[in-house]
Amino acid sequence: MEVEIFAKISALQGFETFLYSLPVFLMLNLFFAVFRVAKGEREKGEWFGNRFVYHHPVRLLTVLVDELDNERPIKFKIADAEDDSLVSYIIETDRMDTRIKVELAWPGGKRPMDFGGPRNSPRGSIRLPRGRAMSLLCNIEPASTVTTVRVFMTSWELGKGDGRG
Image (cartoon, rainbow, N blue to C red; front, side, top):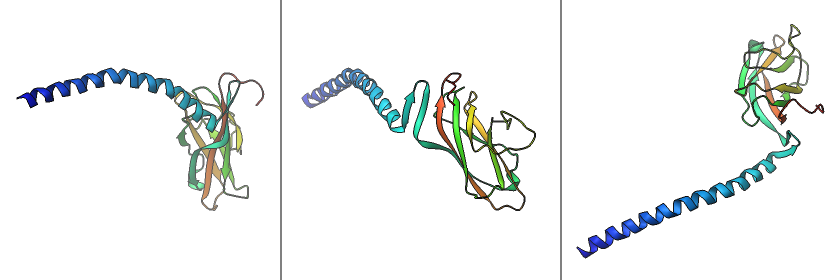
């Protein structure tokens, strides 16, 4: 009987110790999380005013396309940038010729400037809509081979922009 009472007291003391240490554990993790996030951000890139510039471009999408994908929006999400920010991008293709035209558009395929036909815009900036979804539009000449297209984000900027690109 003594052993049972001793076991109950030990279990209660252990549970009480856990309850007292839990808030301390949470507060310490909250305090150190700020430093871990700041370190991770410095490893990715650097802030210049309201613009975050990546040390290395961040890959957003890799896709294989052919002429069947012409003018079909290929949707993807941008996780790192804020809603309504200005995202600077680079689109790379594995072709050395000009048989493919690529550009970014909003999720439904609507272009920022619609000139009637597809245009080649492998570099530029575009305003990120709420929900952070974008789409890639491609136009490949008939009888072309399958082409790899990669989309990268180089920076993003909060607000209306500072006029420096």
